[in-house]
Image 1 (cartoon, rainbow, N blue to C red):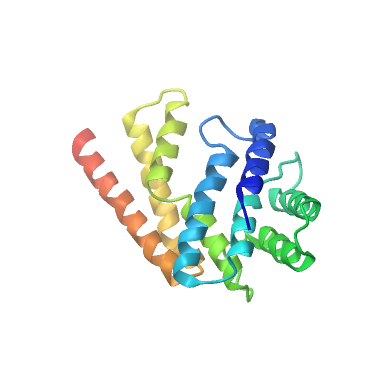
Image 2: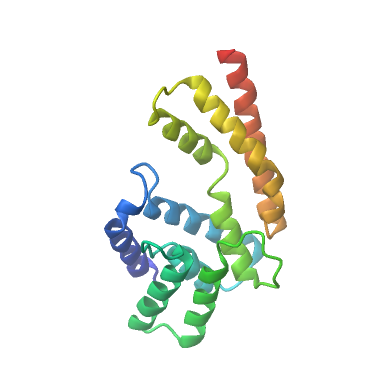
Length: 195
């Protein structure tokens, strides 16, 4: 399957929803990072590539005030995939993954494809990108400082480190640990430089 048309649809649709998020973290950039991680995980773990790619690309496609993003995204994804002639079986699998994706702590029996998309989405929140996000958010606040950014990154680390339990695959757990080590090293170095 050629994904370029789907990527273009995602780019166009997310640009129309750009008011839903702040300027430095937009749905399209997030989606493309999730897409790339999903492909990497699929290459190691297997699973139906079409299901994984379509779910990763469309998992955050819909934003509507007062409604959960996963519900709106699933509706938009199903309608779009139907309009381009994707098989009903594939559409159902993609829609189900999009609906489950935000529930990172689910203990339901989920498909390998769902695990991969959930892990790819979760991994986008940790590591260098997470540090960058926390620093940029702090910079936009009143009384921004290195110390405030430091405390924000440290708080993120403290809250997220136990969330390794949310990783659905061993491959994602390994990557998660690497990213946590990166954050820990960054915090340690920053402490030496600013205190």
